[in-house]
Length: 112
Image (cartoon, rainbow, N blue to C red; front, side):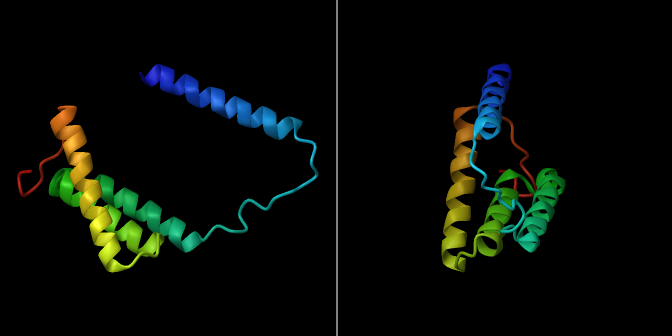
């Protein structure tokens, strides 16, 4: 599965490269013009903290707080929508990985 996923990604990257190489339009885009660096740095810091705290506080709580903060501050959602999105995402991902796929996720301090 990882091998074929890698092949698929390489294929899409090759198609993208060929499209950009043979595209004859003289349109030059400024890639970094619309990037909001504060949100980018915040997201990277949150992902690093997620990786550090995963074993200690567990998959569900860690995923909940990651998605909550990313939705709230990077996605500019209201608190209610952010909490709902974080709760549903962490519960659905737990059910998918732990129950259906039988993957062993870090339990954390609460034991689930």
